[in-house]
Amino acid sequence: MKQVIIDAVRKNAEGNIAKSKANLDVFLNNPVGVATHMDSVETVVKELKVIADNKEIIETLKDI
Image 1 (cartoon, rainbow, N blue to C red):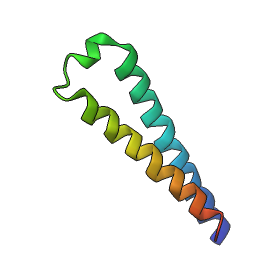
Image 2 (image 1 turned 120 degrees about the horizontal axis):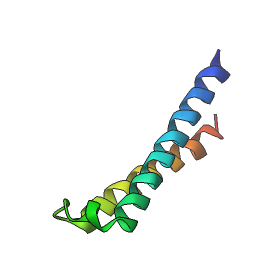
Image 3 (image 1 turned 120 degrees about the vertical axis):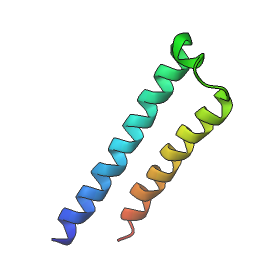
Image 4 (image 1 turned 60 degrees about the vertical axis):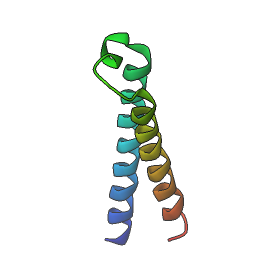
């Protein structure tokens, strides 16, 4: 059971990373999407933090 939960947490983190990378790709490569955001830098930083946080989760799981 422990491994099932660890695997689910890892997959969740990987999904969050993939989602944020997709958001960044759209945001950075689609000028129409950028026009709706008042603070482009803040938006990019937010997605980068999601990626960093979830990478940390994956790394921490290796210690369990």
